[in-house]
Length: 237
Image (cartoon, rainbow, N blue to C red):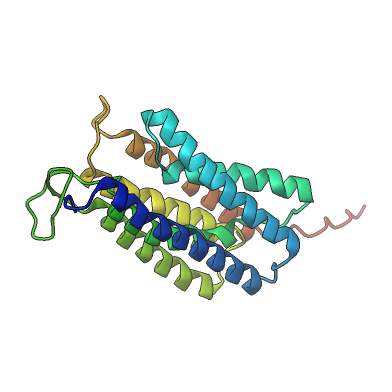
């Protein structure tokens, strides 16, 4: 990939990023139709999620590294906060997490290809047969690893969604947990400094995120599985 000028690489990557956002929006809307939620208010929630995600992805990357770029962790947090704000503003009370559950990995699967083309998020030095020459050395195509992981996550979540056995928001919490596992593993193949604990900052975030999503999913399943108590019978005297 080094034979391409960096500016040319980013020009090639830009439309792929746009395609990733377009695919995420399409998947979101198809899920909204499937759940009977394709309304104007939900469309605004989707727009808020996309704008908030884009802003969060850029802001967190800038604060963490001092360099321009995007980080999906920041995108998820930014999108989540924007969705909460918009739902409260519009008075939407029904859970919408599942609408994003498939949209996020669908968009990431394409977006990571743009990262590969653009040259960001590159991998560590490698001697494997599928290594790519990037940033002056042969490296793991870590961006493509993440793309494949996201596609696998999307496929698994789609199959689970069609079974319809999870309560609302369950698919979102499960998808969040899977994302944390995927990112934690692929991080071993990405270039970047490790913390004193032997893991990168992204891996530390993934550990915390996995615990968070697992707790939320467990509580949701517990509440969904708890039978509604019958009215207490009057005591006889």
